[in-house]
Every structure is written in C-alpha cells, then in structure tokens.
Image (cartoon, rainbow, N blue to C red):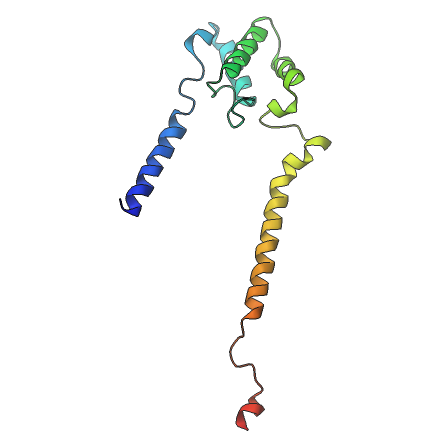
Length: 150
C-alpha cells in the first residue's frame, strides 16, 4: 500500500468514527412526549460529561450510566425542576468533574490555565533549544579581516 492510500483509509475511518460516534445515544424509549421538555433534556445532557467515557457528553454516550443519567434528567424535568436544579442534582452526586464546562473558581484554575501554561512552557523549551543549537553553529568566517591578509 502506498502512503497516500494509508492516509486516505485512516482519514476515512476517522470521519466514520466521528460521524457515527453518537448515532445511537438517545434511544427512542428515552424521549419525552413534550418536545419542549425533550429539547431542554437534550441541552442539559450536552452540558454533562459521561463519567465512563470522559470525552463525550451523556447525550452522545452509549454507556449504561449515561443512559441512566439521561433518564434521571428527564424524570427531574417532568417533576418540574428547572435546568439549574437538574444540573445541580447531578453535580451534587458526581462533583464539578461531570460538567463539560467547569466553573471558573479557585479549585479549577489549573483546568482553565493549564493548557496555556503547557503551551508557553513548550514554546520556551523550543525557543531555548533552537537558540542553543543555532548559537553553536558558526556563521562562517568570523576572523578579523586584518588576520586574513597576513
């Protein structure tokens, strides 16, 4: 196989995996009859992380725990809870980790600033590395022009 063929196949598999990632997440028996409540449930589910998958919302996840959480969200909405109460109910049981967008508070500063710090540290490492490497390479003939005449 040529390199282009391998890249093409890997790209195709990636697109397929991303496209079908949440294809079967919310099952028909989970849906609410009221379209307004169902839309609210979907919006809430998209804000909460699946604690099994960790890189998907519970709206996209096929994990049994995500299904249970989706059902709990729908039950709470039918009981009359507002969106904040439903999210608070889940956060009380699983902590801020379950939020896909964690709150900006003292114990989550590292989550918010960590990527920037790592990016800056990587940039500084690259800068110092190339400065050291380029500083070790002579620029050509650095001798004094008067020395060359002798």
